[in-house]
Length: 416
Image 1 (cartoon, rainbow, N blue to C red):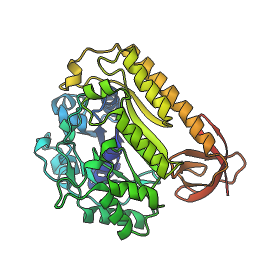
Image 2 (cartoon, one colour):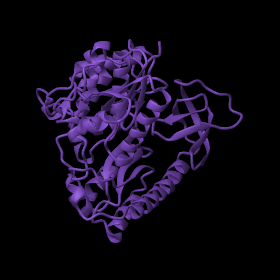
Image 3 (cartoon, rainbow, N blue to C red):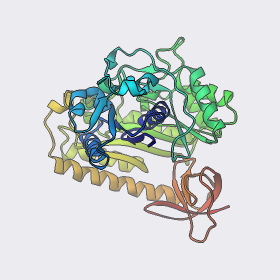
Image 4 (cartoon, one colour):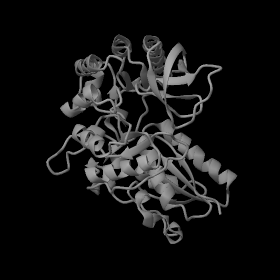
């Protein structure tokens, strides 16, 4: 019997959901599951390639396509050679979707905009990973002009505290020492729950109720929704990791307004200054889009100058990608070659900031979660590898190391 093969594209939430599906589909023979992403055209292209490759390499396998791209345009994915079934984002998480009988029942894609709750799931293992992801929130109520994801994920809905605690306890019992909270818009967590608790309150209760959890980390956060409890945890709680990944998208106020973001550059600068004031060594990352429609050279330089001025070491830079049905797709476009060139300039600015940041960490003790025998990430999410000649560690261990050098790939360290 061939265990189901799962090909995952996109975000940490998809990674978490792939593990849910791995459990549900464990009894199926000769199945390939393709969990798609719709953030960019490139992500969709890669998933289509994966479907075609799976059909070519395993012509007898049943291929099930799911995820955001499949939710948004199921007919397109159903038409690909070898596809047995297309499942929506709600259906893929239901155990009933993964029986032998269900595989022959045709596509199952419900109206995601009608979703009103996020059902909890219990995952105890993430294949090949030393840190675990926990879904705390689904969907998004915002309508940024470039983003199609709300139509793949539906409205914002929160996983109740008790279910999050149960999930984290199970992961810790399985040996995981770090948990990453994930969702589509995690700082909106709690808005649909009684009393409208904040994400910071969830983090505080989780750390109190699962004292054996060693490290808690957040995935991408909206800069204007960081609540007071999150700031207090950042300042006072050593188990709350000193790392923020900001959903920035641009460093130009005009472009931010055209994106329909809810922050301006001054808001982000204030968040960064506050975070560094509380934890001077904090690692800071950001998502940035290059070549958004109407972005001329002057507006791009505003973003480039903002990135360089804020010295953000960990950038995720994407050339703008048109998403059919979004307002931005109807705006005057920038040529793709120019988008890519601007993305390269932003990445270069991020690489320079990373070198400066890593230089500042030299000689300081860092606690690193080893992901292989010789490499891992620090609490600040700095990439660290052991120096040549240092005895290897063990994946899953937390080592205290002393960085002795750095290069374009991160820090080089010795075990203290």
